[in-house]
Length: 431
Image (cartoon, rainbow, N blue to C red):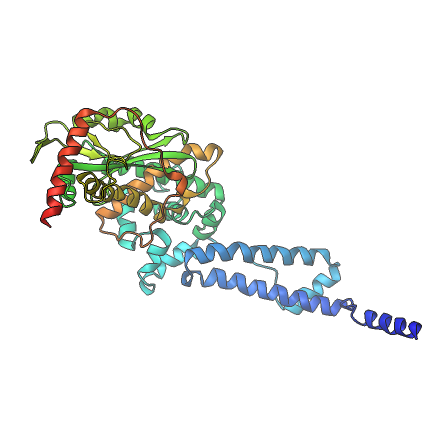
């Protein structure tokens, strides 16, 4: 009985062992697999205008990896089975990459009339009119010009650079979508466009331009901050550098300083910036605001991580503002609304240009400050064009918080803050 039981179990065990596929079965299976991958590749190349760029950037590497896997499987077969597989597919081997005229970007240009308005914003974070206005403003070199560093049409250079900046797309993916010869050419086009943005749009960050500061005052008056000219803030970009920025009440960048070591505190950075050395000229010869309790010169709002200065007004510490109805608490509440303008401006830049939050290492890290400035200039340009802000605001990480400044406070700065606090307390009571 035991022997019989063992025999039955042995037969049962043998029954579940799968049979090795025969050559015809194997070739049919590979043919189906190869055909499926071929259809996926065709869909990804012919219908990519119907997909969001983020979808195609995720789909493309997966389909290409599957295609390489099928190719490796075919290469492992004997030659006669390879022939049988290709015959059963009734297909020729994959065709080479399409030439430039059939690139994704040229199809986008030719079919723009039939695509929704969102297609350009999804791809380049701006509308089609804003794209071509930017192209005109940058005056990128034409391939026919003797001085052209890259033999590419200007619209291809700009499109490739914006697409990479917007989606953190690898240079290889950018080259494929724009019909560029190689990833190296895509990388060169990116840095050429960033350089052109820094040169041609620099006026949008010129703090010393006539009336630039004066135009910022009314926006802060609407926030009950009379004579305020801007809000100063800091952000860590790509875990590689710290950026300092001054913005107006509309979220427009007035000054940007990037490239500071992440180990530095804002109180160490500020005295080394151009803003610090030029603020006396920028804010000079301006009328003082007369409020109850004294006069208030023009000033900037500053975060708690910075020192109090005659021209930089920081919030009260938590102990001073512990009573929710005190003038100190009311001032801090209004002050935080002003500081949110800087956080939102950085958040909009990060949302539009996802490349900034990627990990930058080695030689690429040296270029990051220039790319951040280019992103801020584009932000200002799009505000000027009336383009809507991104619906999503990319917030900084918790590690972006900076420690409060613990040093000595400027007496004149404290006087200005106290006058503003009394003013805001009276405004609050009358509302």
